[in-house]
View 1 (tube, helix red, strand yellow):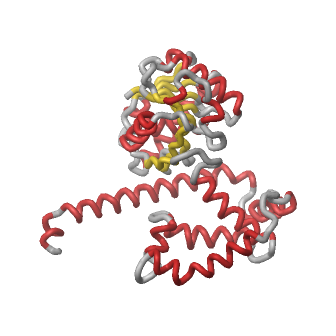
View 2 (cartoon, helix red, strand yellow; view 1 turned 45 degrees about the horizontal axis):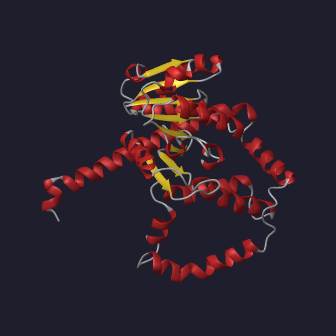
View 3 (tube, rainbow, N blue to C red; view 1 turned 90 degrees about the horizontal axis):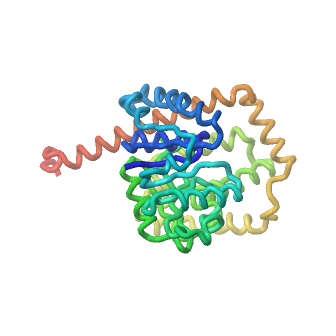
Amino acid sequence: MKVAVVGAGLIGQAWAIVFARGGCEVSLWDGNSRALESAVPAIARRLSDLKDYGLVSDVDEVLKKLLPTSNLADALVGSHYVQESLPEVLELKVEIFGRLDALAPGGAILASSTSGFPASAFTQGLPGCQRCLIAHPVNPPYLIPVVELCGAPWTSSAAIEGARSLMESIGQRPVVVKREIDGFILNRLQGALLQEAFWLVENGYVDAAGLDATVSEGLGLRWAFMGPFETIDLNAPSGLSDYCKRYGGMYQSFEQSTNSRKMGQGWSPELVETLNGQRRETLPSSELAERQAWRDRRLMQLMVHKQKAAHAENVTKLSPEAERGR
């Protein structure tokens, strides 16, 4: 399959890795020549890290699938799927999708990586609007496989299904968002947790380090393997309904206190400054890049572990010995 990645920044580079690692031929385009020139060396460095953890078998083979080009029309020739990853500027999305719709092959699916705009905001009125949708990744998508697929009201089911099938074929985990909503699913869930986290710090219940530890050493350990519904399903003797009977009242009291707060006013500058100060005490700004690289290495280790665990489970299910032992 031929894929065109439009935009050679961090997200475009990450998508190029995902598609090329998955076996696709990838054209990489950017209107900024410097961004395009620096993209392949940056991709090569990330691939080298992935190879160290066994997540890529041959860096050169993946790189051979990448074709940088400064001509958008050339990048789109023969493409079955296009992933736009330009900056979050609505006018830019409108302009580029007009060009993509005019230049891409008629059967190509046109997807955007945007995390802030619905597809309807920049695809309305296009002759090919039915093939346009959002394919919102979680950064970095070569380590975190969830991709949120969300169409506009006019997006065809064939376009959604085509994107879903492609994502599954290259090892991603597509989640179909059934209708447009600001922030899609992941950002709304993250936003709800952040809203509570900021409130707890602002009102003196915990500091930034304690809050982060509660998630990373508490909730996050379970959430690395299961979602919130499965979590509560396993946390009561008779499953989810039993959990809700036992603890529903407690959570409703939390909700009532949340609703009584002044919501929708945003995080105060004073609170943001307090939290930023606490974070800079823990991690100076000069060490942010190093810590980001540490995060990616930990994600690689986690991905390897999850892959091995899934493989072991499948082998156990399929083995004759396991069947006889039942």
